[in-house]
Length: 357
Ligand SMILES: NC(=O)c1ccc[n+]([C@@H]2O[C@H](COP(=O)([O-])OP(=O)(O)OC[C@H]3O[C@@H](n4cnc5c(N)ncnc54)[C@H](OP(=O)(O)O)[C@@H]3O)[C@@H](O)[C@H]2O)c1
Image (cartoon, rainbow, N blue to C red; front, side, top):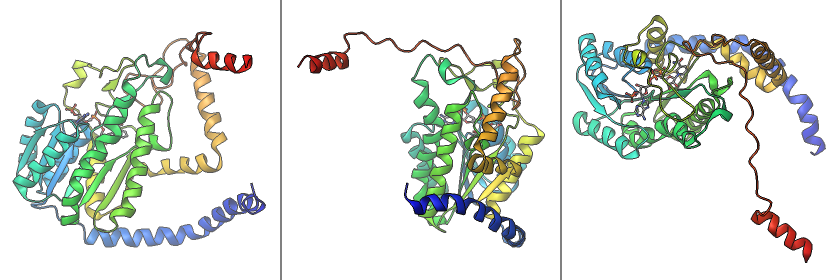
């Protein structure tokens, strides 16, 4: 490392912290004024067209109700069509103008093309795209017995955002519309047993942060991050080690609502209509970003302490993060033995050959 970088390594972090501390009151004031100003000129969604993926449960469903209250036209997308019928009726009662339901899989690019082109054929425009389709998991990485689930997690949680966005962008540019993205605090506060989900969510954030620069002011992007709220994802709709989606029937078919979900959906739609770049709930979780950058050891020690405390107890304990009845922090699984390589592997044969020569 050259001397210049070594000096900057010492000088820049503390200097930036001091500068931030002084700038904080001014920045807060600017944000406050901006918040009031945006509130006065928030987007009127009446007769606008909103596509919502993952609308068949929890957050997606509640977001649909929020847009319905704002008298928007809705396109509800999910794979379980039977759930969308009831949600469509609720949306109509709440004030939605027209509601289309489309059974589609966001992992399939063809399906994404279909629901966006159906939207344009029917309504002639698209104003907001809301991506909520997702699937979580609560297994240790080493517990996975089938590696085909790895790309599957990425497919739903990452590509399931990218495909609809790619197809919708030309129409969103035309309408100077907006994309509302569901990320998670997991992106910068990864928890054990959620490695693939956390990685996918981090990829989602970086993808949209980058896209934000590319689309400039033509298309707005609102990234929502939140901790655990009651939903299918946090109450049992998770992926097992074998890759089969959880079928906790009694939970899966129960309509899930709850103060937190409704409240958060309200915050997200309000934020999107105000043109906010971020909606955070709770926003104090941001502080963990600072720890990650400036004091990662502190986070590491805390997690290790939590894990060791829990692994010393033989019985399974409820999750610290509130994932329904499934504990998040559990004793780590027994390590798998390393893969055995045959002594006559091609690499060793080559090495032996080279030695002999
Ligand atoms: N709940 C939380 O605590 C929490 C915390 C942080 C972030 N989030 C994020 O918030 C968003 C919504 O979460 P949620 O809690 O509402 O989850 P959820 O209840 O499990 O809902 C997920 C939705 O995605 C749909 N979906 C899944 N795979 C799909 C696919 N391949 N194609 C189309 N739709 C698909 C599901 O419908 P079908 O099965 O009918 O297709 C369902 O409507 C997610 O992005 C999640 O990561 C949630």
